[in-house]
Image (cartoon, rainbow over all chains, first blue to last red; front, top):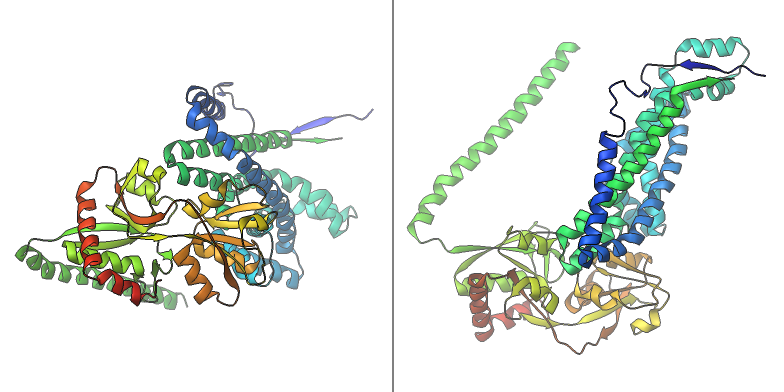
Length: 260
Length: 267
């Protein structure tokens, strides 16, 4: 039988505080409020709101698709860029750093236009693909910086210990440094996920029929601006809250570092 | 080195300050010059028109960053005849009606088609002219009606009567709505969509000027109703409507309207 020892790491990790009021916290209030508001509006005034929510439905799916695909791609790009940024190899380091500098220096909205309309002249990509590429490329650069910060935050002694135990550089990075770095990286990466989800609303300018575009189509036709955008805001809020809960669950799991 | 850096910052800062001061100075000089002129004669009423200036040839922004176009010229002539001052404000189409309802401007002069749905939430002037909906496709496309485009992607500007034409047509692969009609045309040229529905003046302009060799008009989409464009105002704003109608009647009567039409080579 292997003995399981739990090592508590206090600093920086999310641990339920003593003053926690149980269910009465900001997240629960927001989600209950948002879902409650949506249900209340649909049930009491089905005339506009039920129509709106039906109209928005396929937009939610598109927003979700763009978010999930972009998060996956951005994480991969981010990891590669982060590793590149801490690489001892000058050429790799330079390429990764230049990528970050260029992408970080261009607004996402401009990147979206650029990939779809400017590069679209030479390479015709589907609107959804263009949106996912632009979001991934942009957030890949941001996440690369987060990964780099997380990796460099790990004490040098860890590398030295791993190296003296006979791990090669690759093993040191993937078996020693990254598993520890992941813990510090997760909260800021979670923030990036949520920022990404909200920024997917920008892809509506490429005429991608996401949540916001559907809302705009509906309101520009019916002139029910107040009702439509209230619904759009509430739906975004619900999705964001669910995602943020997911991130904090992952944080909570990783705050205890279990070794066998 | 550090000193050099410091002095550089100083120079830059003083430069910015000087520019800022110069800017302030100019403004101050302008004001007193204007005031007496306005006091001398009773100031003509200024009507602010919102316009989506991305709609050539009706209204667009030229190289000098001025809002120009057929409808802009018409409204300027109307203003002259009816004795008010027309000011144009570039507003994105999507939300232009919400801004009117919120009182951010007095009227919309943006090739607004007069429809019953719109009449329910705003008032319109007399018609300026009538337009039609046209189907624009790539030069290689053989389809001459919507039915022949089944299974393909089609686009129009968001919230326009062009979009209403295709909104409920079944069988398209995708119906895309664009913020500006120009972006829809760009997507058509690029090949992302196979057809665009647009107002006739705009369709003619794009297919004869900008993308003359790439896109063409496949058909005029017949409707049993005549589609007129007019000036939209907030519900109940009879004052602006009266002024606009007065000016419109005057320029149509004395031939100014036809002259503007000719100058813009409108049919």
